Amino acid sequence: MDFVEQLKFDDKGLIPAIVQDCKSGEVLMMAYMNGEAVHKTMATGKTHFWSRSRQKLWLKGETSGHFQYVQEMRVDCDEDCLVVLVEQVEAACHTNRYSCFYRVCRDGQMEEAESKGFDKAKVLQEVYDVIADRVKNPKEGSYTNYLFEKGLDKILKKVGEETAEVIIAAKNKDTGEIRYEVADLLYHLLVMLVEQGLELGDIYQELEGRK
Image 1 (tube, rainbow, N blue to C red):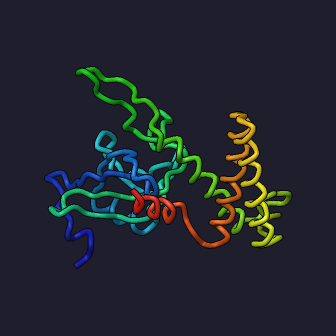
Image 2: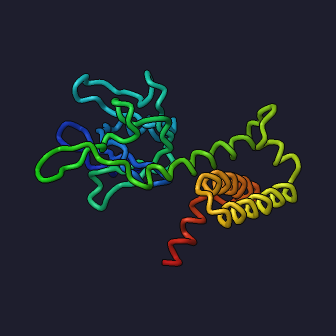
């Protein structure tokens, strides 16, 4: 049986779809799909929804360029709700925030949520993605491409050098220097991970097992 035929749409022919960042798990938005939207989403790899206010099908990012590239689509046990795991371009919310869920209820009042640590940690994934893209789309004058051209030995040499710089900075008790050198080390470690075919998710999983 076709996947869409197994879904339980409401009396208006709609099903709620929760969109999540495929890497962080952050909930980005909730919208509705009809059968055509589900088919379009699966066929194109970009999220399509049904606008209840405009009564028409719409492609997320069609005007803003903030497309959602679908990595996986899941259905709940009752088959009446979808979770769509995506790679989000720029921002999911029309307010230009990354997620539509940027407010929190505190003491019965609605407030803007403070930035969570994992939000800031997304920069690691973003840098990783840029490094990985340099492999597929080399850029003239790119230091990252220079490292890949020189090969693993050069990358490992830089990892060793930056590790030594972090140690020296820590011995000097210079927090500004430590911050700078740790950033350098993290960048070169990410280059090494890309070269070795490992993703940040692999490292997160390893750390998770060490709790």
